[in-house]
Length: 234
Image 1 (cartoon, one colour):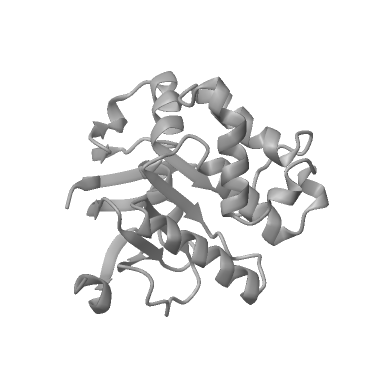
Image 2 (tube, helix red, strand yellow):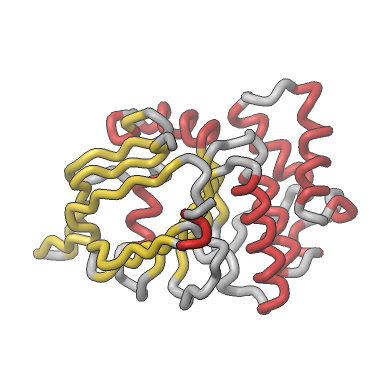
């Protein structure tokens, strides 16, 4: 399988007052195309830092971050923004939908920013994504008119607007009831079945056999990597 995410001896440090805090310590990690990965750990373990490095939101202090064949730590900010829009969809914990735009306008804006989808195909693609996440009837509503679960579905549709190879989700079910959380996980599983690489970051306990691997962080280091036996046998 193709390596789609690679970190080689990657560290990230921050200056806090008169001291240096190392949030990620010489992490080496490979994620294959089409894998469904959970990154777990307590608050402060380095999960968000790792996510920010994979998505290019932050730069490593040292080491290599290679995603979809590009050494993204070497790109300029403008190059990163364009690269990110084409390659990675991001689902945030608190949705971050633009409240003054309707749900479908949020998706169309993501397409407009990247300009990867032909203009004459954007409306149809947006409708197809809303249908996939089962909120097609809510496309003309503003985000505040939707429930938390519906807003998360809308955020997933927006993250997929430009058909990215990778979807990362930061605590995507942390603020949802158990039934809605299960439906969101089902969407992720369907995406993986269709070839998308999905990386979910969470502090919750993981007992979901849908994941191919579970990677645990502690104090900025990988302390455990569990491979789902049933998934590895496929």
